[in-house]
Amino acid sequence: MAKGRHSLTAGSVALIAGLLVPLLVRNPYYIELGVQIEFYMVLAIGLNMVVGYCGLLDLGYAAFFAIGAYTTGILMTHLHFSFWFCIPFCILGAALAGVIIGGPTLRLRSDYLAVVTLGFGEIVQLLATNLKITGGATGIFGIHPLRLGAHAFSMTDYYYMMIILVVLGVVGAYSLRYSRVGRAWHYIREDEDAAMAMGVNTALFKLYAYITGAMWGSMVGAVYAVSMTAIAPESFSYSQSVLILIAVILGGLGSIPGVLVGAVLVVVLPELLRGVALFRLLVFGLLMVVFMILRPQGMWPENIRGVFKPLVGKTAGKKPGNGSALSLGGGGE
Amino acid sequence: MHFLWQILINGLFVGSFYALVALGYSMVYGIIRLINFAHGDLYMMGAFIGFTVLSLLFGKGGGTALGLVLAFVLAMIVVGVLGAGVERIAYKPLRKAPILSLLISALGMSLILENGVLATPGWGSQFLVYPFTSSPAGFSVFGASITYMQVLIFAASLVLMASLQIFVQKSIFGKAMRAIALDKDAAQLMGINISQIITLTFLLGSILAGAAGVMAGLYYKEIDFMMGFDIGLKAFTAAVLGGIGNIPGAVVGGFVLGVLEAVGSAYLGSQWENIFTFGVLILLLVFKPTGILGEKIGGRM
Image: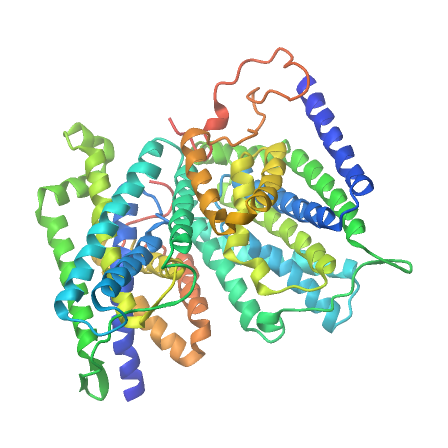
């Protein structure tokens, strides 16, 4: 397992660099940028379980992010719940919504899920904009920040808190990937018919993937609400869902290091292209088409059967990849 | 009662746009099993091209029948070619790739079209008022008022749908399309040029979407770069409602959805219109995923 060790080394180096950032960089702008990157990282890790691991296209992931954020916002401002007590409710709400949306849809061809989730994302945003309890277009504000004794959390504290969440996500996603459930997802992604023939209950496992992503997304939403202290419907729009998806796709479907890099790209590229902000999604759209045609496995492909060469050190005696990462959704050839 | 009658009539008008757009979805899905996410945006392109043609001809308002015809024809040609181009650039290289890659490419194309319009000077992000003033004159049928403009739009959409149906049923190309939809490999063995027919399918679907875009501009009198997003969702619902892959089904689905939605939003409030449509889609997928006239879609084909 030399390869695993190399990934671990690369991951640890990145983690230590991440931990040092607030000590070396004093500019609050960069800390906020860092927090933003971390949010996209954890969301991309969650969406990757649905799109990358199981091959289901989810175009409304921001809806679950919204469910978590609004559940937390409402419970904390109206009912004065403590933050930690909100989380089970967020997860429950997301799981429920996931079953309602995914249950009927995932029995059908997987591409139906794309349109249904697109609609679901739209509906959640519409509900948030039109309902009284969600504060309409202005949203919810005055959510109390987290406290540790007398100390209210600052942006830097949230930065560290998010690092913990990223690490949790990475560890969780890796363990899921090689668990029984993760292997079933992988079979479904590669060839749904064959998976079914081998006795995998495809509808059920697809639902697991969708709901796992949903619950994770809502938990991230809860943290988002408490760290921003104010939430509004536009943070949960279609373009938000698309941006998270872009992080997963450009980074590398199914690849944890890939989606982390993708998340950095999604935040940093628009910052670099400040002058041409209008072209941001245009550039991402172009990249999506170009990547699908020329490099569907993404910038940092998933490491299966030795496709991936680690950044640090040599590959230790693995067979050369036979392009397995090229087949994303189901037996292509 | 008059109120409901008027709502039904309005629902039928809107339904005719849904039907035209749903046809494109349904044809493409029938032939290569792809949900073309860029299709709604082609409709939007139609509206913008119509806008530019009418602005160049008439400035801010007014207008003649001939100018209107010109706007329709140009929008249909440009959008048709654009749709076929989208297929050639973004979908054709991926014909052997997994469906997920195709869907992602389609999504990318949709982003390119939307944001391309957003970044185009003169189009941009604001709502644009359609530069065509139609006379409010009309007549009433059992108390429901209908303008001549609406009749014209409705008639034009019926003509387009009928021509498509005749083309698909009677022409040799239509026969080839149906053959590919049934069995792609067998069709290829029979000497049908698959690539050509697939591009033709995109061309036809996009022509209809372009026409629907101009009609929507005339009917709603206002357009914006995200108008294709909503109609994409609705037309897909209409296509599923009628039975995806089925041409008469798409038309029936469009009209049924238009009427359902008009009634729904009249009683629930128009801000709930999309939620209503989406509810229809979910219920449909639970209880009758094959739609009204559709083939079997459970599982993979």
